[in-house]
Image (tube, rainbow, N blue to C red):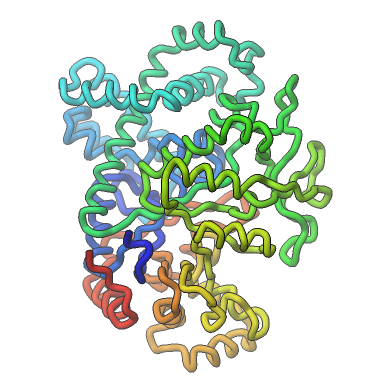
Length: 503
């Protein structure tokens, strides 16, 4: 597997791809980006979670842990399949080219998808119908619940599932049957969207894999409260049995960065029940995501060893407690089912020896962030000379960090001097290429860079600022930014530091 070899790649969520439809999608932009990766000698394309997003457009708060985000569906591919007309595609407004206007995208794309669904229903080809039936059959274990959930969500005008009529909120069998019959048309539409997403994504993944590029995905440990996962599997979450209110919320305790901690608000798992169920839901979740990606990063990995649980009613994370989780039992069980696990542990923040033991016991690579390397003394574990193991992934920064150019511009003169002294000098190409070189030359098996750092962009191109609800996830690049000179320079560095992988 490529991931065991010395390699490098680029972090870019598909929404950031160029497209004339206001948001990156699974059409031409995705294929051209893969071509750029190949031309640049890169073997990894890291993405964020692919699920259907809700309020705030965060890929870490989705309506489903297993479904795909319909806004990524390419209208051009729908046109190629005869499901929409050229006139339909010319009826789009002029979108911003450098960021996503999510509201405008949803307003214009979803009516087109409904028209495509009607065309498919009335005159879809026999081959397409056969593929659709096969998809619905193979993935019925999550698709049926998801399609009903999203249809109910629309029916109840986006109210959370715990606010629905009691019988359907509690998933009584007679209510499930009645609503499934009543909402037959929207349920079909939701299944059609997932079918289109899945087949378009699989074509992109196949194209990448055939060119020796692996898809490096992301799985958040927690799921959104208002999700099909919590509605359909309420027994494995810490909820009040009568009201379905969250009994225990996820977060992290007070630390150097926040005096009150971080209260995320997701329900934590009832791990006792998860274990009684033989970890079935979690195993299905990993099986499903490994059909979308080749390698998966577990966000907040430490939560599998112990997690911070905050009682309901609290407004900060201060009054929580650490609760032990059966991570070793789970990963052993997962290994029984899936064999060698292509998992990367997001082990950032305050990590204990027990968490390190869990990570190392299963030989999971951890993460190293260069932007964190210069804010303390010489023992800083993110400084490359302190990497004690090659089995890790080094980043200039992640989607939660500022761009490298933006980060450096915000450093004090003393801090900038410290960075420059470590590097010997900041190369004439800029601080972004200096840190890219530093990562490339490290012993870490993998080196990954946000595309914003490859392009040398400032803070305006930042993907996400944690703790800020608005203004995130919208950055996009333009086709003309990925020049042959950029590709050649990146490939030169990749060869120089021994990261070209040939199968």
